[in-house]
Image 1 (cartoon, one colour):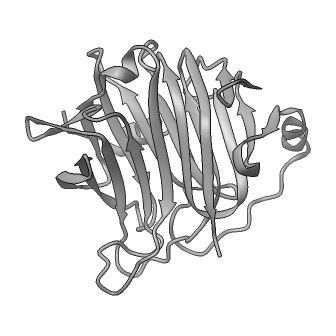
Image 2 (cartoon, helix red, strand yellow):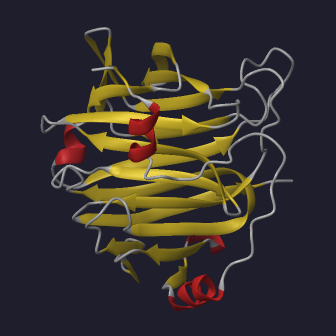
Length: 269
């Protein structure tokens, strides 16, 4: 299930996102054109949880309901979804009820931004089998992209830890994503090292997913390892200068239902 992906496939998988990453000197975004400004002015935006601004993208629409915010019109994972905008943050978390993500075989993607610059992205793709998924993260803190480490937990216990190069995706199975409504927690953060012994570099990007106990299984060299929490941690090469904050998350999906039932950030100091 673990497969090597070429740079061209990766570029397609992440839908040609221009990643300026978790590294290097921050760049000043080029000023928006008049057409872009007009498009933003017409974009549907509402104030969501904790003052976070949620804006519809593509053909999606947002509406408040008894659970939180309903996102509808999710037909194309390349365009349809929402953006969450906020002041500088070091951590973001989304709790959502997803429905029928596997029906169209497209899955969902997430991208973290610092202004207009994409810091990191991840695709949760749908495989040929009805319960098959794959995770394809993209980290940019090292020249040419960063390798990463995947950790899988079950009931708070580490059950699998593996290292992957930049051009690898992680295969597995997540049955509930293919069928009816399922609760999922998704997180992104820029890590801050605790001390000199911390194995994770300050500024390293991290994507996390949490489901019900035994929600998914990961292929570990032909063996299925089940878990309820998975994290993908960027491994930054020596000499890189990672970002330590971000200001937006873009979520896109092809799904029959998507309800935001909680969203929060930890602001950068």
